[in-house]
Picture 1 (tube, helix red, strand yellow):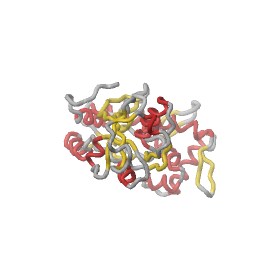
Picture 2 (cartoon, rainbow, N blue to C red):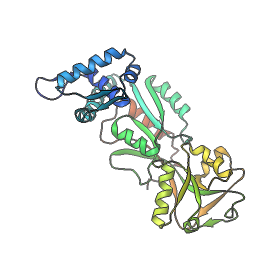
Picture 3 (cartoon, one colour):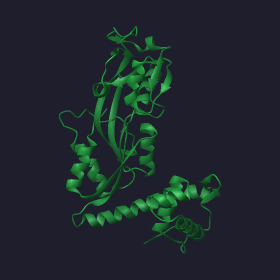
Picture 4 (cartoon, helix red, strand yellow):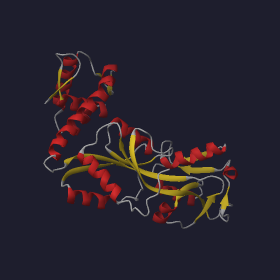
Length: 315
C-alpha cells in the first residue's frame, strides 16, 4: 500500500511513514523497533530508504539519540494525517459489512473514577470484540492530553478543560464539581463555613503541576481575583494531595468526589464565598480529523455512561 508525497515521481509506502512516526515519537531507533516489534536494522534501513525517496535527511543521528531535522518536523503532521486517513478508509470499508474493529488510544487522568473504565471496556468488548483500547494515563495533565489529541497521538481523552471546550475538539461534559478549599482540622480556617480568596494570599498550597486541570482552574480563579498564590508542593497524582494537606505541607483545593474516595479524616472543607471554582471533566476527540468507527464507538459508550438526569449542562 502506497501514498504519494511530494513530486510526481515520489512514492512512499505507508509502512515507511509508520516507521518514521515511531522514530519521531520515541526519538530512538531502538525504542521504535520495540514499539513496532521489528529488528532495529529494519527500522534504520526503512528510514534510509524513505530519506532517499524524499531527498532529505529526516533525523539528526547522534550518540545521545536522534532529533528531527526541519524536514522531519515538516513531514511529521503530514505523515500522521496520511496514516490516520488510510486507517479511517479501511475501517469505513469494514464498517459497511457491519464489523467495527481497530485500536483506540484512550487518554485519562490519574485518580479519576467518574467513568468506570473496567465496565466500559467490558461493554465495548461485548459489543465490538475486534476493538482494542490502549489506556494511557496523563504525564502532563489535561493540557498534555489535549495536545496529544491535536497531534493525533490519542483518539479519545478524559480531561479537564478550564476554559471550556475549544473549537478544534469535539467534547461532551461528563461531570462538574465545585472545588472546595481543604485544610487540616488544626488550621485557623477549619472552623469557617466560607472564605474569600483574598484571605488566602500568602498561604502555601499543594496542587498539581502546571498543565493539570485542577491547577489551571484554581490558578485562573486567583488571577481573576488579583490574588497571588504560592504553590509550595506540586504532586502529579491528585489522589495524594489530601495526605500532604493532612500533614501540614499546605492547603489545597479538591472536589467532594475525590474526598469521598480517599477519605477526609483529619481535614476540613471551606467554600469560597466570592468565586465559582468548578472542575469540569469532558470526554473529547479531535474535531478536525475524521474519527474511526472504533473511536466513535468508544466515545459513544462514554456518553452512554453519563446519566441524563445527572448530566451537567455544558457551560
